Image (cartoon, rainbow, N blue to C red; front, side, top):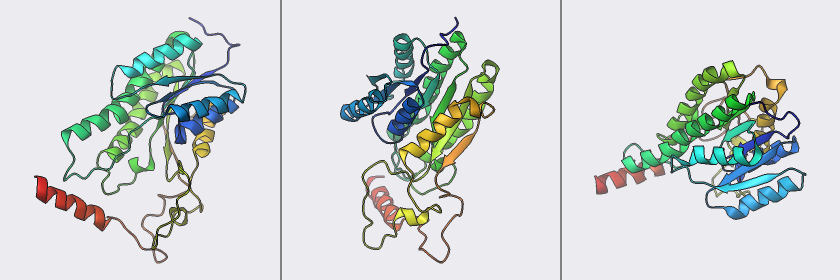
Length: 279
C-alpha cells in the first residue's frame, strides 16, 4: 500500500501532556506534522498541548493510555493509524522515573518499571514499524532515554539500567529496519526543567551551576533535536544516542569549585534503615 504524498506527515508522541513529550509534540507541529499524543493521568495537560498545536493550524488527537498494560502499545498505534491513515514519526517518550536501591527494590517494582520503560518502548516501536513497512513510509522512530543510561548514579539500578538497555536495543532495531529506510535513534536528556523553577535550598549550589553551558535544558531543546533527526537533513543518521544535557555528564565529579556527592548519605542511611527493619 502506498501512502498519500500530499497528506500531512503524522507523529505519535507518548506522554505528550507535559514536559519533554509536550515539547516534542509542539515543535513537530511547528514543522508541519499532525500529531497524536497520549496521557496517563493528566488530561488537562493533554488539552493544553492540543490547544497549542491547533493554534499552529495542525491537528492533535489525544488518547489515554497506561503502558502497564502490554496490549496498550499495539492498540494505540493501530488507532492512530486508523484515524490519520499513516504514521511517519513514533516517539516513545512516556516513562516511569523512580529511584530504587538494590537493598530494597522489590520484584513488583522491577516488573512495573520494565513494562513501562522497556517493554512498552519496544512494543510501540514494533507496532509503528509494521505500519511504516506496509505503507512504504521511510519514517523515524525515537526513544527518549536519559544521560542516566550512560552515567551511573546511586539509587538508579532500575531506571538507569533500563535506559541503558533501550540505548542498546535501539542499535539492533536500527539494523532490523534499515532495509526499509526507517531510521531509529535515541534522544538522551540530561537535567531538564519540566516544572516551574524551584529555588535552591540553603546549602545547594543549584543544578544550573553544575551544567557546563550554565542552564537547565528545556522540553523544546529535545523537540528541536527530534525535528532535525526526523528530517531529510539527518537522513544518514540511525542507531545512535544523542545527549541533550548541556555537557552535564562530560566532566565527571566537580573538582575544587563544588562539593561532590557521588553517593548521597541520606539515601544510604534511608535504605540501610529499611533493610534492617524489613528484611
